[in-house]
Image 1 (cartoon, helix red, strand yellow):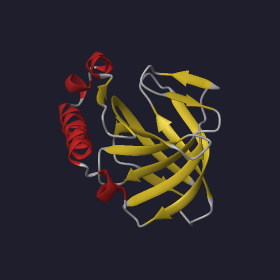
Image 2 (cartoon, helix red, strand yellow):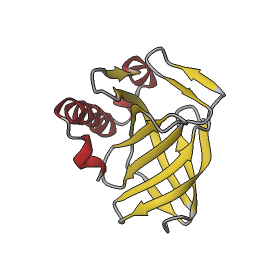
Image 3 (cartoon, helix red, strand yellow):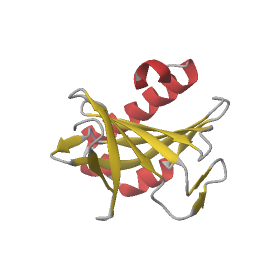
Image 4 (tube, rainbow, N blue to C red):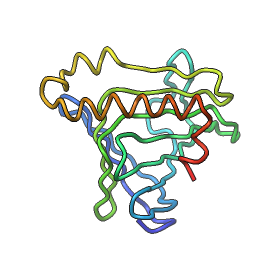
Length: 161
């Protein structure tokens, strides 16, 4: 990915669901790729602990060797809302497409780091990954634990450099 170039982010989800959207490539060192994109969902999505809405900007960090991605979320005025972290298979970049596979586990970290919330563990269990692919399920659980440890210890800054 060339800085300033357009990339299509493809998020593969369970039950053959797929989300894709355009983003601007910011950097890619061959392991860690960073893109920026506006919120691509409905005009407002209220999770209860944060609202994503038109005008929000996501700076998204993907790794080819880690089982997660981290998305810094900023409001239209530039204020930091927090970080939404997806547990995923390692990212793949081919041509102008960055692809990752969502494994249903998520973590939310508020801007002031006072809230670190593990999300969707029930959805992860319901998907049955542990039965179909125990190795991947183990990677997913360890990735969620790693993200939570980084969030609670202030390790996000080093991770996102």
